[in-house]
Amino acid sequence: MFYKNLTFYRIKTPFPQPQDVVSLLKKAPFAPCLGLDGFSEGFTPICPDSDHFTQLAGNSLAICLQREQKVLPPALITAKLNVHIQQIESKEQRSMGKRERQEIRESIIDSLLPQALAKPSRIHAQLDYAHQLLLINAPSKTAEILLGKLRQAFGSLDAQQPETTTPLTALMTQWISQGQAPFPFELDDNSTLKDEQHGATIKASKHNLADPNITQLVHHGKTVTQLGLIWREHISFTLNHDFTLRRIRFNDELIQQAQQQADNAESLFYAQQLIQSQNLPELLNDLVSLAGGWVKESV
Image 1 (cartoon, helix red, strand yellow):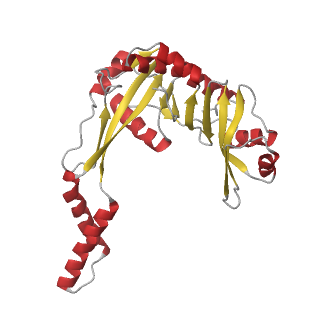
Image 2 (cartoon, helix red, strand yellow):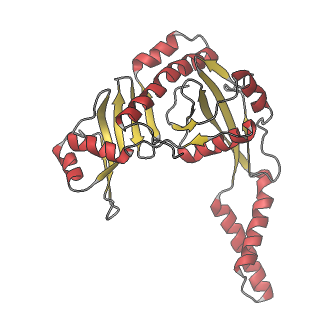
């Protein structure tokens, strides 16, 4: 599947071999939420109708973490809590303390969990053996869930947050001030600028970012925290200051290329994975090069 979001980590120790990854993931499989479980998570086949826990395409190994989260409406919990509090305070003629309120709240949640609906979700990721990257189709907080579970399955995983010599905020701010991005990137039509002194945020959407009204904001002290970019006319995305990518869109040519190579859901997944594994690491490498390379580790 083509990713719509990207959080990635630099992996400092070699990944297990692909055939070993399968057996490691199968030791931490997904199981549905039961009884008083608030959530459940574990690795699952990459496609709903597949038995394969991994799929190798080029130098990229696809994996998937499935989660279930019990959904309890806060309003329902609060309503039941208020009824309990009113009954006890009225019967015993006293005010209830904070600790007792919390204990009753937890008791109510425990009574509701067995009947609560479980909301399912799937987090897809790729182990990039060529570049030692873990690419995750999720925002950073969700990506950390998969990273933590993968560490448990592998025993350890030395993962680093991406950090470049030139901070991305400085780089994006420079590009807006110049009214253009250097090859192989070009400015798209959205950006978020922040006044670091006062905290005010300005969002530009469907706007020409080379417009003097936008560039003047930078000249008056605003910094860019998010920037819409287009890479080699192949992929459009929004780059965040923390090196996560949002609203990723592959162009029609790449989408059609994947569709032409597929005759079912599993082969389409493979074709998309292969195209993605050939493009996303190259896009990231181009960004890193323009940002002066990775920050060197202290010895």
